Length: 300
Image 1 (cartoon, rainbow, N blue to C red):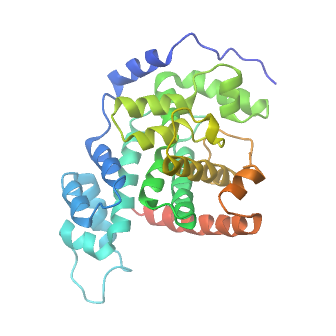
Image 2: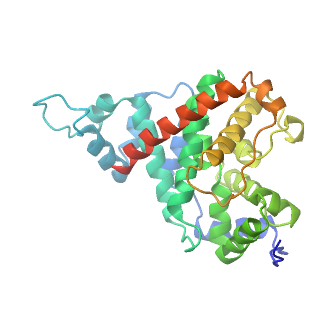
């Protein structure tokens, strides 16, 4: 493996304090969306109130609602958010709003030429889609929350790029040359861990504790290693995003800096009540749903 000086004396607190100055808060709409989508009882009306205050999301919702597949023949164009949301439905409204908000956040970060913004977003969208599918398959009561966690699980990489993109790229390159998973490379070389950074940033933004925990442990398949996570429901949610992340990497949807494919252990798969045959079926479902979602969102 290529030896490279990536270990830094910079502390997590140093990074978070530096980032606070550049990204002091989440975009307000994203903060509220995350909190509301963590609530299983969120309604179309509550989402409508939120969307109406964001012009960028409003324009995209209206654009989608006026697509041919939503309009009846000779139906007049839709011009109000209320009518648009009732036309496209709650699920589309939530997913559009969330993706537009996350894209806005990502666009505030200058990506290096060797690590493409589009690739990371594709990966995150894939994990969101996979998390939602797995949540429904495994009986988790809030697939929207799983989708949200999947979409922002790698936010720590945005923080690393924002803080020192040259060092982040050096880590990605060295991990690739050494045929190592990026998370393993960070850990072995005592680099700043993107999962830890992401969770600390979520704490600073006062996001739901469940989201913070998922980001912190989305690479940890062993429940006993998830310090402070005692809830079965939260462990279930982390399991879902952990597996979704592995499946999306296997399916090569986007790229998040990992060039080594890892798989969940047979014991982990069995603990979820799945087998290899069902897992293959789920993979096909993920690919199909991802293609539909990416095609749909590309028109925004």
